[in-house]
Image 1 (cartoon, rainbow, N blue to C red):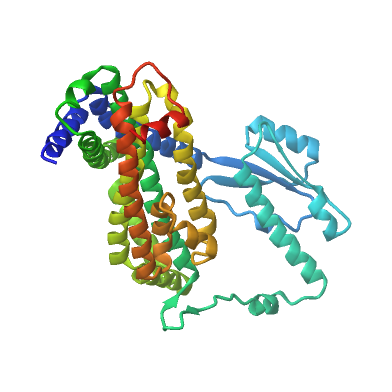
Image 2 (tube, helix red, strand yellow):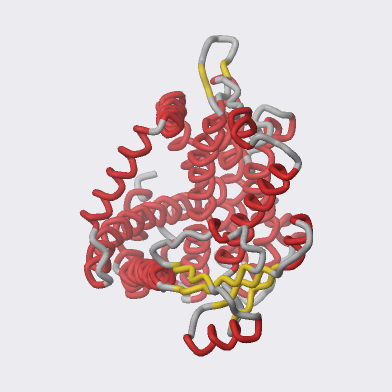
Length: 437
């Protein structure tokens, strides 16, 4: 394996010095931050838009519902009929007119409410109006039925069931959210890393094969050394690109914040003020305590070690398959028939993790897929925050490593023959023959 280091070095330097690699390393965070900043800026403009809504309440019992906010002003109209009110609102350029028709019964009010506007109104605004009116009309109905509203409010009870394991470990509902967030991030990161840099490995093999450079290289380097060198070298280039994205993204975020007038210091001050208000509220204190408890209960050391091992194992497993595909074909068009069998278990792992692990992390489906090597890197990473026995993690990791070694042997067989094959589109039957050479 004396040449492995040289192959890794060559592959790494070739990648990081490539113009397209450098351009995408610089442009990707710029495009992402610009999009985020523009969307945030436009959303801020939309939120800061001041709206005046006229209220024509012929019942006279719902006026107290509407209180002005920073972005919405409610103007009550009196002694006007509907047609005159509509003309007045149009002339003044108000956002819309909420019309509450007079009815004989409180029960009929809900079916006699309309909102008039020049354009389609905001969905959020309509939902907000509906929520206010629903609560008020419900209270009016209860009062008419003789219900004491003060006693009714006092009788409302909020239930928050305390959770504790048989070993005495306290948990809460928010634990599942925090655990899913950690597991989902780990699984999604691995998924994207495999897709992006696995394709990079495959394209690299195809380029060298079509340019006939591979014929010179293979004369002094074993195929398995060349394949492993490409995988490791490309992985290091990917890590370098990822770190560059983080650094550039942080710098650009500060620059774009200044351009769009976002005061980061002020935002931090507002967050601290909101945090202080939440801490003064008993419910806010409980919510913050549950979040801290959920993070404290996470097996952080186990998560870190497992993330590194399963991330590396999963990436190497799929990368070897991508390299084998690149060696078997002459162009990217021919790779489609071979990529689908690789992507299906990877996509399946994400769906199983999202839709099964959160509901039943220790169920049969979640457990089985966390042992299957092609899905275990994603599913097991999503299960670990929920508490997976060490022996299961070790068994899953052992199966993953064993499958990787077999895959490397399998891929090296295809790689050894495929890199010297030109002008013929291989089939699965042809690949099976190559394994016998």
